[in-house]
Image (tube, rainbow, N blue to C red; front, side, top):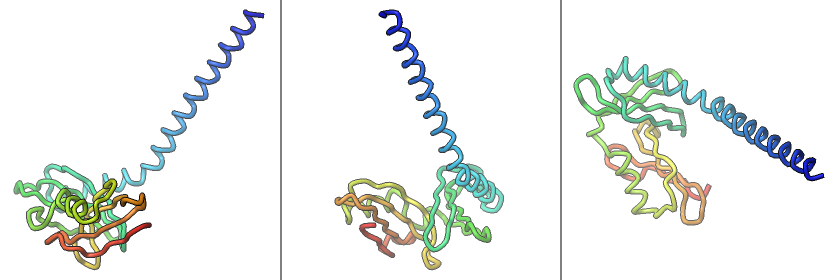
Length: 165
């Protein structure tokens, strides 16, 4: 009887490990497939930024999705200037902004921290709202609700806020 119990316990452990491996592999495959469109968009945006924005190096990638979807690549161009190259998802229209002509992602986050006192900042994205370059700061407020604040890239002023989603 003891030997049978040991055999049964060993079989249960083997099945548990096999199930764990299947769950981990399955989750990895699901994540990879879910991330594939964004990874493809990032590769395409970086290629366009290198070609049309003359980027020689990249330092960040932002995905913005409000009225329209924009992919922005931050980096240095061939003249060694820090720029943002914004690529519209539809039509591929490109805008290039000197990083020095506006506020940074960190400054946008700090503005939201000072004014909204969020529990957590989820992400920051660079995009356009009504033809104006903006930083979108996504955060969780004190009540645990998702919020968005759009700040002008040019001067950091409040453009729009969406609270308690």
